[in-house]
Length: 190
Image (cartoon, rainbow, N blue to C red; front, side, top):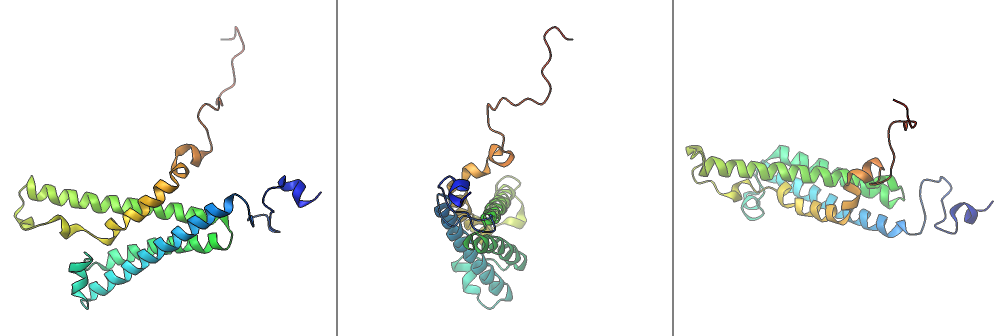
């Protein structure tokens, strides 16, 4: 039996049977690896910038790039960047499971973007509904953070691979598969 018999003439399987060296999955894997590299570098770079602003060295960055002095926020950006870069490392070495890092990174980035957006909405409610004096002079730009506007990168990734985020794709169950959990009743049985 040859490799062609096993793979039906499709992409040849490498010796360790974990990766495909060519074929229909290669372009998708390359796109995901490129996306993971770009997103990882962006998150790490903005994490470094936010850490520099936290030290007080570059106050101009806070005004021009809307980067607040937030060391914990920079740590979050480092972690998100590391998740993407781990996915890039595995995908570029041919390990298809690296896609999980990319998908988890996208999910985490969207989650943190949503949290930052909710913080902005709650502060707007403090100003306009509760009329809290502590928020006098507040502007929505005061709550803009790199995790919020870098969420656009995660949205691009989500819309590129949104079929991978469906419940059917996660569980492997397709609509209308007709699978039932119990045994069928015999006719006439109670």
